[in-house]
Image 1: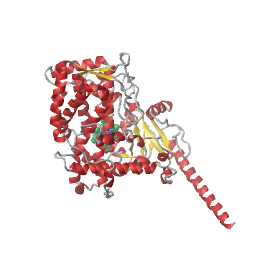
Image 2: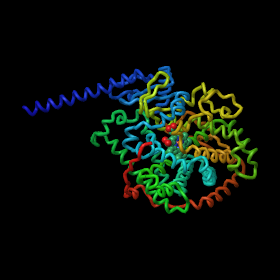
Image 3: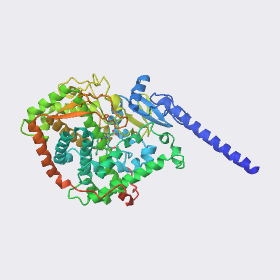
Image 4: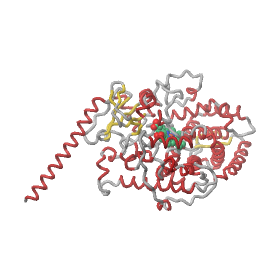
Length: 542
Ligand code: HEM
């Protein structure tokens, strides 16, 4: 009797504590909400997660910015606020101009605490000494000067890509993926990816969509951190994510060890050489190299597919670009880097592609301020996730008249451009100190692929069973956070017999050129699981 009274009392105290805890959290949300940018009314415990659409949140955030008549809005994931900037000016004011405050990352539960991005990965690390070390190291492997040394490799791979697509246009997506993974693997581990069933390529495919975990409304565990501590049978997600992090870290680290055997210099060699000096752990080395796959493959592939889509949909623009290329390159050779500076219209097409279909509609991992800040009259508390809604920013008719129109002229020098907060006229690679580390590499890949494809082929819509052209829907994109066109049919018609012959010869020469990077990997996802990973060292914060 006494025992059951005690149990009842304990239960009552636990319930009262729970109610008070929830009430306190909710009162705090409501208090902050009054001072923060407007947005939908949050519920206790859950915030707005039931109001956030499961896919394409960027459209809903843009709509909410109209509903609440503010370019900058707040949504709540449980008790944690996310501020979404839906125009170029507000995001640039915060994350470019106030970069001294807004260059950190919000610590997310799933991608951060469980997957470990905020402990080991440049893209997720908070602003501080560890992030600076990572940023410097990646920069040393991918800055605008260094990437020029990858030009021969990119050109050879682009020639092989064009040749492969001439033979098998229906394999466009697979061939592009092979290009992007091969480039990442050459830079990171000094080994080229030749075949579609290479292990690294398979792992890279597995990574497609992994960016989703870091964005709002994806999991209850993000909104309610307490769920992280439930037993596995009640919430299997944390263990699954932890296992995924551990297996991929082991895999990428095993590739780094294998990369020591490569005859070519590579990023992994450098990192292992400097491990002590830079105070790097094995997990950090795995993440630094793995970022070339995780950050670079999905994004670059989808951007080049958007370029192809735009060319199919706009034969007039394609023709104008081909005329420009023909005039500069001439009939007797295929295009190369020396032609780049003489192709302003092609450059404008590529910039317009980046604006028209930004690979990250929500601008990549959220920024976070390291101190409370006031923007306009609004409070943005320390640690708030701050997202740049590139979908809305890139389609604002104030900065981009007729925003849905694919219109390269808007990036030509003599175009009467509306004001924009930065010189390049878009923010597809992000803001301030966290701007994408892979940008120079991407520009080179985009140029060399686009110039070779436009020179070699008339890029046409595919045909249906009755031989009629099927024009793809320009808005048919997947729902992942890295937004990619849904599969579309394409015909790649060589522009002449001479070009066909040149493509064949160039591809043979490219295969020889790339021989230095040929090699098999012995590392498999399974074999890598025997690798032991050390734990991170503590670094003094700057
Ligand atoms: C079309 C291709 C790409 C696009 C559109 C893109 C876009 C972005 C964006 C929007 C961010 C977030 C920036 C911010 O927080 O303000 C980012 C970060 C990053 N990207 Fe890319 N990216 C691309 C390709 C690559 C490649 C090829 C690499 C390979 C190294 C890469 C590595 C990274 C890294 C390491 C970060 C984290 C930067 C940091 O937090 O310090 N990205 N990218």
